Amino acid sequence: MTLKRQQRYEITEFLLWNIRDHPSDIVRVTQENFKISRPAVLRYIHKLIQENRIEVEGTTRNRKYSLVTASTMRRAYEINSSLAEDKVWRNDVVPLLKGIKENVVGICHYGFTEIFNNAIDHSQGTQIEIDVKIWIDKIDMRISDNGIGIFINIQQKCKLDDPLHAILELSKGKLTTEPETHSGEGIFFSSRMFDFFAILSDKLVFGYKDNLDLLLETEDDRHGTSVHMEISTASTRTTESVFSKFTKDFGFDKTIVPVRLARYGNENLISRSQAKRLIARLDRFKTVIFDFKEVNQIGRAFADEIFRVFANANPVIQIIPTNESKKVKALIQEIKREKEKVSKIQG
Image (cartoon, rainbow, N blue to C red):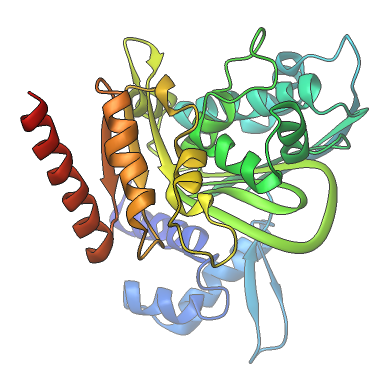
């Protein structure tokens, strides 16, 4: 490839990969990056518009550019005994992914089939709808059903307090309403594989973006469940790399628990009952990481229940706090010191 041809390729790729973040000033950004004139950049943009790779809207002063969807598919399926997630994936989704990197396809394969199968087996609905969109820079997959709603279903079958309690349990992993036929791992691992993963049901949205937990309440009272998954086509993540973070000897033995999900509204985390709700089912893991992000302080009883009572009852479990504020860290260290003193006296 000649230098001139190489530069043309680099400018074109730069436009396509940066236009989403710079819809209004992509011309200026490209000018500055390649030290070329505005008319030169506009020639590249005009060519991409002619090739139907980008589109433009607005007048000269308010012009905005955006990517044209490379592939798109929307289809509904009746839930019946013959519906199978692997067939839908193979026949309807795979043809859209030509040219996509193998590791990205692998993640899409895992997430799509896990979530589609959950809708078949657990939704109690009659229909599943999929919406797949592919751009040069990312893949967007949505799987929706018209069933009871995942949070209400978990609440009812696991006899939990409310949908928020169901979300807390869901965040830990290893939660299933049908343990005889499901491991409860699909949603946990899928959420860690994608750049953005969200579950929408009723008025609640729960998910992860760049491995940070999300919990929102909306005005949209959505019936059924909709799962939204996004991943960059340039991602270097693999299914194996995600599994390896939470598994050992092929077992799912490590989890990260967002502590703030034990909180209702703006209430403080102070009681043992709140802590007991947080640590429920965690004896199934060998390593538990408590993520204190957005939790600035906790009560002594709350901390004691986790870092002394639970720790004493489960000595083989490695308990790791992370993202603690200074106040939280100081209290946890104090609880641990008191625990060690008692152990020495008893020993």
